[in-house]
Image (cartoon, helix red, strand yellow):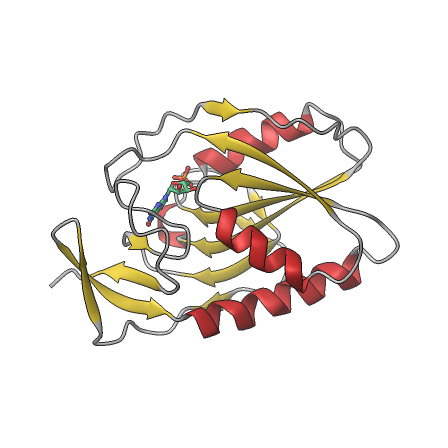
Length: 195
Ligand code: 5GP
């Protein structure tokens, strides 16, 4: 999988602080502060690169609602927003590999500068599915943002334009990311403790 912008940062090692979710132990991994600082950098880059244009952000529900709300506030040029919703992992930690669309985009994307916002790219199947849907609208341009990226797990060949953090191939929760629909409200991101 290609990343076209030199914005990727490898996330720091997990801390010793742990929480339990669905009976499993997770380590504090990315603090709200680290996330915000990275989103600010990406928001600034987008504002500069899209100067004079009005991009439309396409947020992928449910997981990306939080990153979208924060990133949008770091974008200082005019921008619009719309939402699509894909099937999720369900209650499992591993993707079923089947992606289905639960809510379609409402906006007319023809001739628009579209920026897709994801919380995490794992196998890349969801992003591949989304990009195919977006291309069908004939946008003027199409770029992708993901807060997290698991580079060792990619099966697909999609281009990620703005990547918050490269992370190991381990399950993460918090900051919009769920485990069986809970944990989305945690302000920080936690990573599964393998020990
Ligand atoms: P992909 O299609 O790239 O395999 O997976 C993308 C979607 O799977 C994400 O939008 C997210 O909903 C879910 N996902 C992938 N990895 C994780 C993870 O580590 N934690 C959580 N909570 N969801 C994940």
